[in-house]
Image (tube, rainbow, N blue to C red; front, side):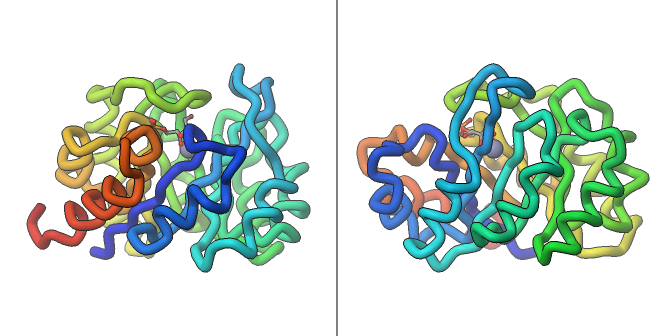
Length: 221
Ligand code: DX5
Ligand code: ZN
């Protein structure tokens, strides 16, 4: 199974976004971008113009996590901005299937995210259409929160469901992922690891990202 590292720039120095991404360019597979609207979550971060501004500064796939109340409205602008994929919160849409199709029609990969308290059942009807499932391991909205161990059984159940679906669906973890919690996520079956504070809050983000890369590349951990 390919394991991917997706550094999240939410808690990086956003005044130097391109330079911060350059620090992790070698170690990263994807760059994780947290779009927040101040409604779906209490925090407000950035939107499609910042995604477009970053696009020429990295070769990596831009993995856009949409913590917004009306994600479908952003999809055309994100496709235009060069987003590789969008992850839509299942709690934010009336019809997840329609949102997934809209993203796919615009040429983007499409994922579904779940808040910690949202049952896995909410995404199961969409496993035939989805490219990624993200069971959040913190309440979405802020970086630097503590990992919720209680989500691990949901991650393992998602891995089983993906196995049964027999499709290449990525299983992402996001929130409180660090050197201590990442191995638990690996054991539960995750294969895309979003890491924010544990990289950009480190004294040497480039070295921290390389250490996560090494952790993921090690055969059995
Ligand atoms: C939180 C965001 C995360 C955040 C992760 O709502 O979705 O991507 O940046 O940050 P850490 O790794 O610090 O929990
Ligand atoms: Zn995120």
